[in-house]
Figure 1 (cartoon, rainbow, N blue to C red):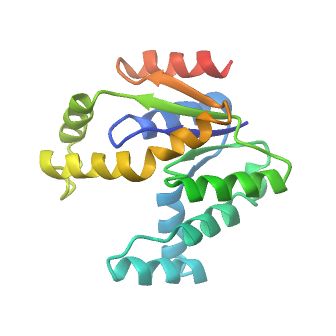
Figure 2: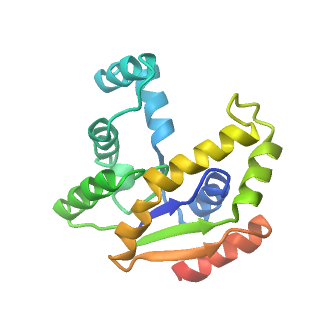
Figure 3: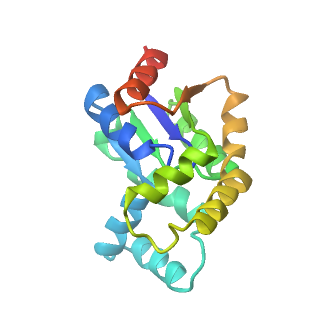
Length: 184
């Protein structure tokens, strides 16, 4: 089962991914973790990403897709994966679909966590991670970038009839029960 966990910053993707990993016994693929691992291990891709980030630029779609497809070739992903933080653009979604298709697989479910913007802002501010961009103004900017650049991925998968919209407000368990319900 290949699942994309989707939603804006603060929707609870990381929290729900942890519950899904243990419940479904599926590996979790986070692009952030892949970037950090490749950078730490000084792989060719890690060096490429480091130079891009050091220049203050966003990692291009081609590089992100290259990192992800390289990762999902590993044996641990043969029975499926929970994607978190990927795909972030329609181009990445198309590349992922093509890669999976070439390997006789597909995205089985696209789970999107819907949370009102006011709640997202409150959650991010209360996380206490101390990120430099965890101010109301910068959070609104991050949410705008999400709406402009990432939300179109939702429409891409809606056309493929794999989208499952989940009310992302409630207790962690209530939200997880909703996810299990749509995946059963």
